[in-house]
Amino acid sequence: MKKIVRIVSSMAGSIFLVFVCLLAFVVLSSRIAGGEPTILGYQVKAVLSGSMEPTFQTGSIISIKLANKHSTYQKGDVIMFRKEEKLITHRIIEIIQENGKVLYKTKGDHNNAPDVWMVSTENVIGKYTGFTIPFMGYAMDYTKSKAGGALLLVVPGILLVISALRSIIGAKKELEAVKA
Image (cartoon, rainbow, N blue to C red; front, top):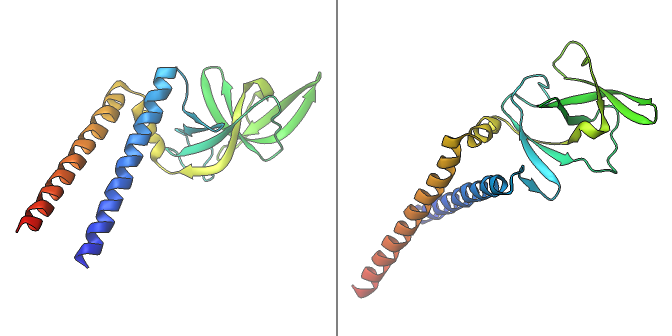
């Protein structure tokens, strides 16, 4: 039984270590490239307002399928769009054709009234895929700060050193057991 617990604990620790290192790699590579982390046409974004509750909670991260020139959206789709310097994620409640252009009327699920603006296709970042992780958006937003970025460098480094030390100590114990 002890052996099973040790194996499961070791596997959980390894998975956590890989996850933290992968997160650090994605965030740091996106900073070096000067853009947002993108994987196979998808981005993960933090939601820091409650306008779309209960669809997703404040502080969640959501997956967005990035828009391209062939993207089309339907009434009921949840889209992320740029309004001035802010990113907003709301549901399409109406599609309007005006002078050959497609415009979307949007509304947050938690809001009482529709948005006062129309969203043009050029301002659409992408469509919500239905994937969300509650409360991880707070951590993701923190990683954008200098302290958060430094933490993403230090924590994986410490975890790698601890992992290496555990391996060395385990190998030393096995060697001593074989000698005895």
